[in-house]
Image (spheres, rainbow, N blue to C red):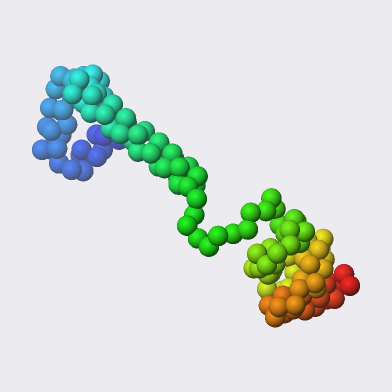
Length: 147
């Protein structure tokens, strides 16, 4: 025994010295690892089934979102235009309503070009919502130094 262990056993008493002696004389056992035994076939099959279900669930979520994105919405019919830049040239009440609907709260649109273009289209209109949107657009352009 080491000197430190001898000192500790002397402080604890003679009964602890006999316990330490029995532990030293005991045969050494080989340590067993919990993962040393191979997994059973049932457990391996259960793991494979669980992994397959997880993959199937993940694929259904991914493809379910993509299929939902492809389905048309059942909302108000909107004007079919290639983009917001062609609304001013499309003419008609639907195009003007779409221009008014996409106007920001500050009176402008996405950029200066679009603001000028839509304001010019609204200037040709004489229904009340278009006049209000045109005034808001003019105020926005004046505040930003575009007019």
